[in-house]
Length: 103
Length: 103
Image (tube, rainbow over all chains, first blue to last red; front, side, top):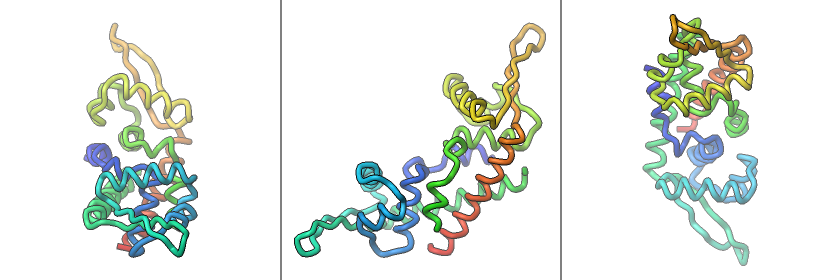
């Protein structure tokens, strides 16, 4: 049933800002903090909070490096993150298909 | 861009329990509280809170009636709710399509 599938949607991914971050990272090898911030239109603090949640869940990898003297935060999707993201998108597709049948 | 579309997803609908409630109500003329509770596997308090949010947004109508001496809460989708729900599902489809292109 569609409702069960909806209630089972991965809560780590479902929050829009985290879904948007994963959507960026699914398409690139890695992205820095500034690029992600521009892509998802988030504040520094809000983006940091959500990146930490994705990292804690093992969905992304965060590397702090330097570009010359400037600190740089590089994010990339882990294998687990990609697997879960693919599952999430697959579930969304099934939910959408079922709704279209109802509407 | 997919990220903008994600950040624009209607927050009234995006919360799983509210999405699940609307998914039930999209398919029926009306549903009572007990039926919704069973469908979305929520506690009374949690379901009440989310039904109130959907009602305050004008997406559902809540009618308190009696079946014999037993109070009954009947919920149905408003025209506005249906329009927004269709838009939301349409947006989800576009997001899914774009992700599939990236994965």
